[in-house]
Every structure is written in C-alpha cells, then in structure tokens.
Amino acid sequence: MVSEYTALVITREECFGVITFTFSH
Image 1 (cartoon, rainbow, N blue to C red):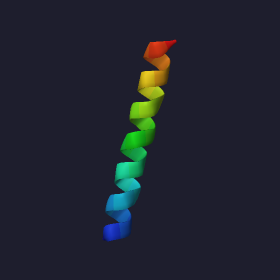
Image 2: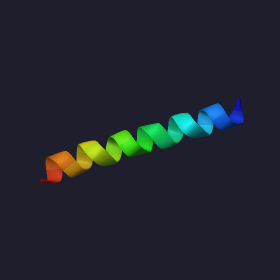
Image 3: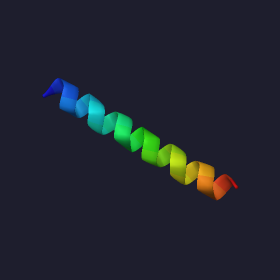
Image 4: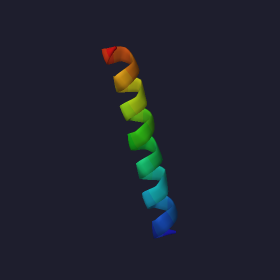
C-alpha cells in the first residue's frame, strides 16, 4: 500500500510538472 501511495504521489508530481512546463512555454 505504501508503494502504491508513493507511485501516486510521483504521478501527481510528474503531471504537475508537465502542466507547469506547458504553461511556462
């Protein structure tokens, strides 16, 4: 369960990074 939560957090971080990168360019 902990690994699933970690994967979920990483996925959210990656999605947020992509959104930020898109809006910053």
